[in-house]
Amino acid sequence: MGLQRSDEDFGQTLGHWGVKSGPYLVLPILGPSTLRDAPAILPDAYANPVRYIGDVPARNSLYGVSMIDGRAQYLKSEKLITGDKYNFIRSVYLQTREFKIKDGNVKDDF
Image 1 (tube, rainbow, N blue to C red):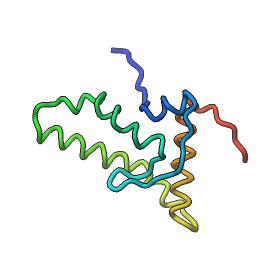
Image 2 (cartoon, rainbow, N blue to C red):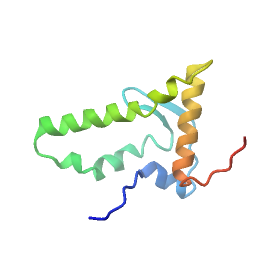
Image 3 (cartoon, rainbow, N blue to C red):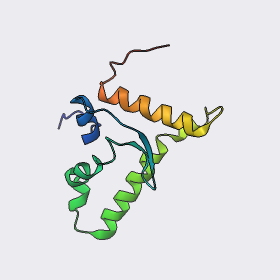
Image 4 (tube, helix red, strand yellow):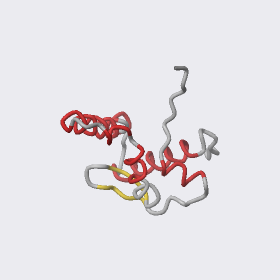
């Protein structure tokens, strides 16, 4: 159809409009998040077309695959960890979120 893939969520929308990320959280099952991004899961859930699939086993399977895929994003990073794993994962998550919110236009302090 010629549509471009867009990996956006409501937390990114809030960040774009100036809502600060707040403290870093690690949610059970869902993984890393921030105080801004955690409540944004609800509007994202209602906007997700998977929610409206009538076949319960198919819907739950798609949710499971989505959760596994979300966790798999950080597996490559874990091989690079030297030192404190918690601080490393937090830093990777927060930098990735900032990069996504600003569409790649971030200031590099390096």
